[in-house]
Amino acid sequence: MIRWLLALSALLLGACAPFHLPLAPESRARIAEVDVRVVVAQESFMFSAQPPGVSAAAGGGLIAALIDASIQQSRQKAMSAEVQATVGPLLDFDYRAEAGQALKGIGSNGAFPFKIRSAQVLAGMPMKKDHEATIAATRGGSAYMVLMVYYALEPGLGAFTTRTTATLWQDGNPEPSYRASAIFQAPLVAGSRAEVLQRLTAQDGALLRSTMQASMSETLRMVVLDIVSPPEPAKGATSKAKPLRLNFNGTWVPLDGVEIEAKPERTILRDQAGVLYSLAERTP
Image (tube, rainbow, N blue to C red; front, side, top):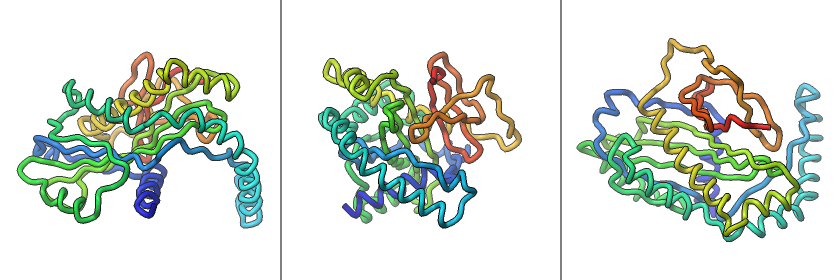
């Protein structure tokens, strides 16, 4: 449980705070192969009630923050029955298994910029001594990358989201040579909670399974694009032709950033903090 909490805490901090260390070209040139570990600490979906926003509306302050906390706690209790009704139909779906399938595809189709020497999906971070030993063994062109993944259905079931931190070590150096945060989001078809769940789980969960696999494949692709196309300090302006929106805790909010790749179905962009996003063009 302690390892799970530490892993999740590190992931959430990494996904929310500025957390981008580009891989220098000279460091990238020294890498011939990489061992990839995908850590998925969750056993199932996690949900939270939508925050009331009293503190922001009131301009901050302790009293407003306490009101926010009280309302949030009340909402969490009120939605517990809904959460149980939602999670129940989803318990048979294993994100680790779907991530493993996606990882096999990435390793075999040559999409990764380095040879993947080994790839595993884990339920928790390796033991400290094993983790340090793996880092120390990154010599002679080998590297070690860990991706920590958190996944969720947004409140209201408007979208499926994964938040990932990627860290890479090389040359036996305990300090990483690359760090990044990547957020993947797929909007879900509108409808009542029961209707959305029915669509997600129909045909043995074909839609949910494909979305899970797509999230892992696209996250790895974001990392690849970030490695081969690091940000250019001289280019600070947004290059997007049209704005995108992110479902943040149940509310669709506009998101600006520098466009990295645009395709008919998805756009990958990097915000000012260096966080990567893969968002669908079609949002509500």
